[in-house]
Image 1 (cartoon, chains in turn brown, cyan):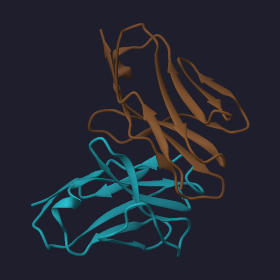
Image 2 (image 1 turned 90 degrees about the horizontal axis):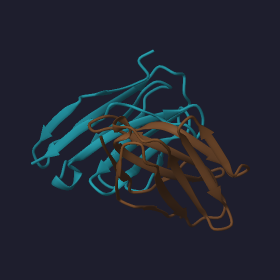
Image 3 (image 1 turned 90 degrees about the vertical axis):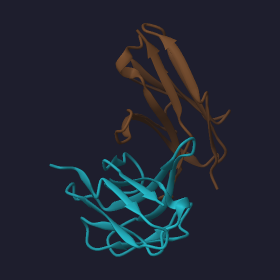
Image 4 (image 1 turned 135 degrees about the vertical axis):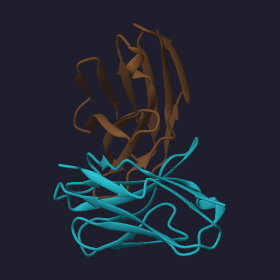
Amino acid sequence: GENVEQHPSTLSVQEGDSAVIKCTYSDSASNYFPWYKQELGKRPQLIIDIRSNVGEKKDQRIAVTLNKTAKHFSLHITETQPEDSAVYFCAARTGGSYIPTFGRGTSLIVHP
Amino acid sequence: NAGVTQNPKFQVLKTGQSMTLQCAQDMNHNSMYWYRQDPGMGLRLIYYSASEGTTDKGEVPNGYNVSRLNKREFSLRLESAAPSQTSVYFCASSEQGPDTQYFGPGTRLTVL
């Protein structure tokens, strides 16, 4: 089955810096890659996703890039703010499968 | 719209007791999921229901059963709770398949 590795497990940045979280996947047939944000004590919420037919997607301060050849995708957050502090999860899904595979999460801490 | 709701929010059980976690969605979604979240382990899929009338095992189904009662409701049952089932349980739904999942607020379960 699919295996998703997420790094780093913890990321500490100063307000205004950029943050990058990287995930690698094993199944070359995976074609959908969402990113979820989970604030402390809250539910995970989708913040951005990308499909295998595009290489990059942006939404204001966040962007996701996909490298199908290397089988990795990354979340980029620019101009970080304290409210960006949360755990971020990546996931991968193989076409036709109902089972998404999640990474273990990255705890992002943004210091004011 | 309430989105995805779960009951109860908190529960403490003794080893061997049984209970049912309730989940409902009002978004007319076809697919529903049950996950457990443990520290450092990300989200692991227990069971899912691709559509009304169907259920399938996920990554960690042992010790659990599910019922897709109707299109709105998907319940998770622990027949004989064990301390290893102490976790936070999230229900999720999606229009079709695991794209863009909407999560409920979670149930924090402790088994003594």
